[in-house]
Amino acid sequence: MSSTLSMPLPASSAAGTGLPTGREVPRVLSIAGSDPSGGAGIQADLKSIAAHGGYGMAAITALTAQNTCGVQAVHVPPAAFLAQQLDAVSDDISIDAVKIGMLGDEAVIRTVRHWLEKVRPAVVVLDPVMVATSGDRLLKESAEAALRDILPLAHLITPNLPELAMLVGADPADSWAAALEQGRRLADATGATILVKGGHLAGADCPDALVNTAGLLPGEVVEVQGNRIDTRNSHGTGCSLSSAIATVQARLGDWEASLRTVKPWLAGALEKSEQLEVGRGNGPVHHFHHVRPALAEGAFAARLWTEAQQDLADIYALDFIHGLATGDLAEKDFAYYLAQDALYLNGYSRVLARASALAPSEGEQLFWAGSSQQCLEVESELHRSWLSTRPAQGGLGPVTKAYVDHLTAASASGSYAVLAAAVLPCFWLYAEVGEKLHARFLASGEPGGHAYAAWLRTYADEGFAEATRRAIAIVDAAGRRASDHERAAMVTAFKQSCRLEVEFFDAPRLHS
Ligand SMILES: Nc1ncnc2c1ncn2[C@@H]1O[C@H](COP(=O)(O)OP(=O)(O)O)[C@@H](O)[C@H]1O
Ligand SMILES: Cc1ncc(COP(=O)(O)O)c(N)n1
Image (cartoon, rainbow, N blue to C red):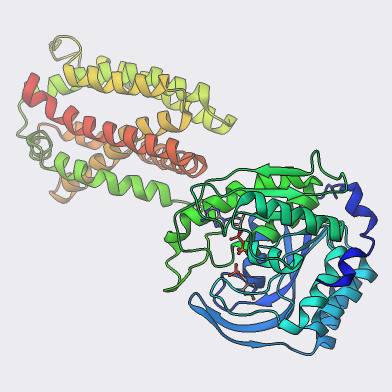
């Protein structure tokens, strides 16, 4: 073991205070090697930093040619150029946290050491990278002593078990207790906090622990439990963990809280790693597993429209629609349809009023309130004109009741988004069918003796078309804001209404 281990360099003053920078977006510098396959090194660091809301920077210590199967080559550029990179950053930018990864050789370590002594960043996390997951060396054996010497300049050191063993000059720990004991020894020797990681142990658990023997933590050992994820995609876990914890520490100033934030994220990144399908070996983790892809404007409405296509096709195939178009529809069927429409509109108006009550903005509140009023006006117009000359057709029909019940249930769900999705088909499908029927009527030369000519002309209402466009835009925006769960409920409510639109047009055949 290096003699310098017993003579730790003084850590920077901020190390002990653990004061958070309080910055919303910490500026985090990774000093590490490049992994062109994107899973480890600076590439993993920049993703991890961004995944935790930091602003990532990177000074490159070494270039590697590697992929998920192993390291093919390592090129360490002149250390003087690394010094230039580091100075370029620190001369211009306040750095809230530094993460140090692969250092490569002694000259690089010396350069980083001088820079750390000069700049004294408030948070320094050092991952003593020596050997890649694939077993390839990333630090020259001759540089191991120099690496030990730089450790006291770090506030947190994050060795895996083989690295921990090497740093304390012992055999790799074969139990968690032995690993913690080695962690204590390294904490004693460096004055830093050690993150002892359970990744290389066997068993269903995968614990990590912070170890500090200088009284910086609530206890000498602070353990954070975790379950072992069954995956071989562990390429870059150490890099990802250390840069994530540096970022969160810069914001929180509390190592335990930072570890408790980062560990579940890393577990999720390991769990979702399969989704990436990167490489044939030990694949990378999914750094952004927690970020849902944003839906583009119109994308959710487009999805709903796709869902509605079968119901639209079913509507066009109905005898009722066919009869309305040709004028051959039995008068009693039409009368039944109108009477049910009037009853439906009354219930629909109440549900739209509820949408108005739940609306998140005054504009939408006004839209639904206006639509609700419009419904009642159309209803009374139906009674005044079309229904005044036709005998009453009994009470509430079964489909009308089912439709109004469905909408009422959607309004009782309390979700504005679900309610808006449920009321949309009455705008959208009705406008679509009306426009088609009207166009067909015009194309046929508006035959004079057509029994439903006056009704078909009412379909050419630009005001209703405009209201429909607005309703679609409102539901689209609500869908984009919604959680996955709520969005799925919106689709279900929308589809149910589409189905009921089909049944509503078919009801006269069955119930008149
Ligand atoms: N299979 C796994 N399931 C859950 N967490 C893991 C797994 N493997 C590693 N980890 C976690 O990933 C981090 C890195 O650990 P480790 O694999 O020991 O280090 P390294 O990547 O440096 O070899 C630790 O937080 C560890 O607990
Ligand atoms: C450039 C670089 N830095 C670090 C590692 C170690 O990562 P891991 O041991 O997690 O594969 C690596 N493979 N490449």
